[in-house]
Length: 245
Ligand SMILES: Cc1cc2nc3c(=O)[nH]c(=O)nc-3n(C[C@H](O)[C@H](O)[C@H](O)COP(=O)(O)OP(=O)(O)OC[C@H]3O[C@@H](n4cnc5c(N)ncnc54)[C@H](O)[C@@H]3O)c2cc1C
Image (cartoon, rainbow, N blue to C red):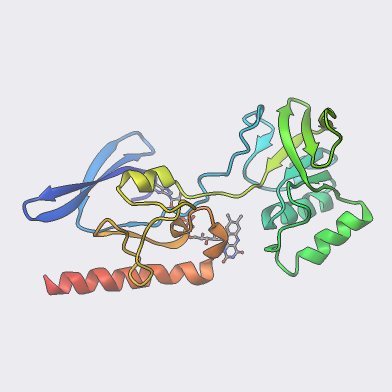
């Protein structure tokens, strides 16, 4: 069903058989419960941004998703992050006429930045068309500025104030681990759900995970290229069990 969010998955015993009650709510607010012998969690991770948890993060000019550059023509834009999303949006916004400052907690861009993006962003930083502050974290977001703190600042130094018109916190995303855990699945220390890598069945029999949802905090390990094969394997496993019934 489209436009319908799964709210909870609860294992129930029906005679000798285990079924799952899947509770959902539609975009119109209608709640339903459906029952199924097998459930596949293919919920990805893009719905849950990694938050900085700093004051001001929910101000209206602060975004966790990048859309398009043109509204930021001639604006001062702060982009927080050091991965592909940060690098690619910085380049686009810079080319669309924004004044971009990249703020990253690491000493350099992440090693996962695509090899064809890296020289472009590094050269824009080198020539000064994109400003970059590495080893720097955001401590607060105010209505007209971001406060940042750089590693190595003298003890007691006040945070630096960077005036800005828009802020993009492109610091990654993570699967809804609370939802997965609520279904009874054990998570490891990186929030990855316990599952058999051959069948993608979790430690709750009949409940499977596929795609980005298997990655926990390490979302960089699942791409379209590998994640798309999970579903095929799961369907084979379920079909062979049903054939034996
Ligand atoms: C910014 C970005 C760029 C990327 N670029 C690339 C790339 O260039 N190449 C590449 O191979 N991979 C890329 N990826 C990774 C790729 O997007 C994922 O590997 C892939 O989308 C995972 O597919 P999925 O089906 O597991 O999850 P998704 O495609 O995220 O689909 C999950 C769906 O489940 C829905 N959902 C979540 N929770 C619920 C719920 N409780 N009830 C109902 N529905 C729910 C979500 O809304 C979503 O529609 C990128 C990811 C990001 C975030």
